[in-house]
Amino acid sequence: MDKSAIADTMEKIATLLELKAENPFKIRAYTNAARSIETWGGNAADLRDEATLASIPGVGKGIASVIKDLAGTGTSSFFETLRAEFPPDIFELFTLPGLGGKKIKALYEKLHVGSIAQLKEACESDRVAELPGFGKATQEKLCRAIEERSKQSGSFQLGQIAAEAETLQDHLRALEEALHVCIAGSYRRRKEIVRDLDFIVATNAPAVVSKFFISHPLVDSVLVQGATKSSVRLRSGIQCDLRVITAAEYPFALNSFTGSKEHNVVLRNRALQNGWTLNEYRIALAPLAPEAKKRRQAAKEIPEIRDEAELYRSLGLDYIAPELRENNGEFEAAAEGRLPRLIEKENIRGTFHCHTTASDGRNSLEEMADAAEELGLQYLGIADHSRSSIQARGLDEARLRVQMAKIRGLNEEREGFRIFSGVECDILRDGSLDFPDELLAELDFVVASVHSAFTLPEAEMTKRIIRALSNPYVTFLAHPTGRLLLRREPYAVDIPAIIEAAAETGTWIEINAAPKRLDLDWRWWPRAKAQGVKCVINPDAHAVDRLQELWFGIGVARKGWLTKEDVVNCLPLGKIEVELARH
Image (cartoon, rainbow, N blue to C red; front, side, top):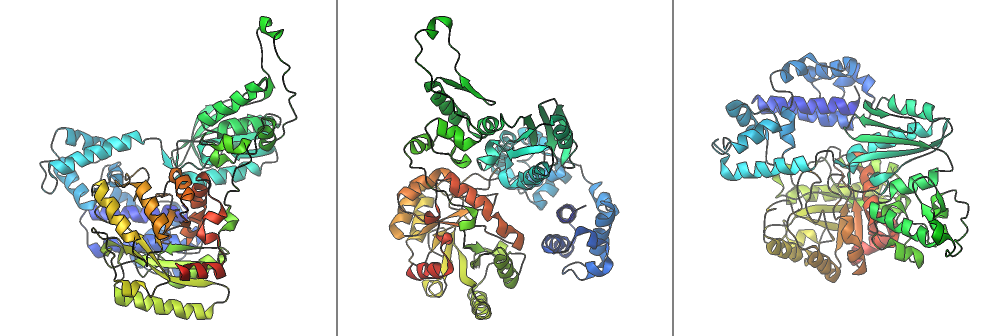
């Protein structure tokens, strides 16, 4: 069992203990142990050693015994005994918004509800509304949540399946028989929600590649096995299709299985205008009926096409990056030479909106800074939660000042790298901020965020956020719609009005790169860019490993047609210091 699986098991133990109404300190101990395992730098095999376990913060003797069993055998008698007390599907209930341990415990004890299917049945028979602490309104919310979940069945956040996808791609590329390998589909276009994965592999040994694919350790079950196409289901639950083709077919297959349906229709129509037919395997002269052949104008000569760039060039277009292939203006721009040079991962020089153990982060200030430096960043902005975020152990004024002083001290010790002092300041219901201007003025930057009162009417929510943006000390607006992909819909807000206000006040808008958010959505960025609004890409990292989620934010920026000039954290240290001071 690897580290992530061990940490997940510890979280499940904490959940089951909560359902049993165990001592809160015991529950918190397992939760803290899960976080310690996630952020611990060693290998899973080392967790079999008692001395190693004793050195990990938050891991006592009893918990160490459970971890040792999981690392050594992949199971734990304590966990299995605990799990046997509850239905196997009870963990499903924790995925529904509005359901915590206490409510699930009541549902299980009073109505014997141990799965989403049983909860749906109990709601439809009005039994949930009769429970103390629930009522009709809660029952209706649960019904809507269950309905929404059923619509999303088979959908995955990009970040949920990225590790599996990249691992499988790397292993296929390492095969001697694989000439070219790429993941196509919505994954390559960096869509925020992915339904399946399409692997395109050029090879002279299709049987070898196919056998390797269906036998891979990440494969949970084989759905179809054929000569040129195989389908499997990976451990995460996502369906994964493999198409094995020749090297000559590769550019056409990769292009066809990458573009959206609308993009591909336009591309094939352009081919027809040249007298060609384009499909997923080749380009050729378009066939004509015998009576039309005499009237046919000479078709253009088909050039040699060895890659996607040559395919687009043959159709009179500049190369269109995969992220832009949505039929959203890319053809007109490609034909006229107006496609932007999209931002690249290497352009990022630093980032903001990161958390530490001072609030709800899992790593210390020093550890976050060290990790950022190791990634090659020149600066890191720390923005722990403000005092109103009680659930996130938000900082009061005194604790924030202590952190500011600590950051000043650390900056004196470092050369060529800087930590910026900030705060993620709650936007209160009336649009005022959680701290007074006098304190905000002492910080390097201020992040304004909505963390409460999500159900306000659109006009009131919009007015609330615009008032916050008018504060001269607010540097940028974080996760502007509050959405949690596949879990929580965006709150009602007038995004065009927010963009206009940001343009007027010079406030940046965030792309929150956490895969569960990816907010502001890519569809809004061409509009924001046209109005001169600057973007800042942040991981909202609560642990050192989450800093690397900047990669997902870059995908959103590319889909939004953004260049490095549009993203402020592409500025090097000296220039971002000037920009922050000016702002």
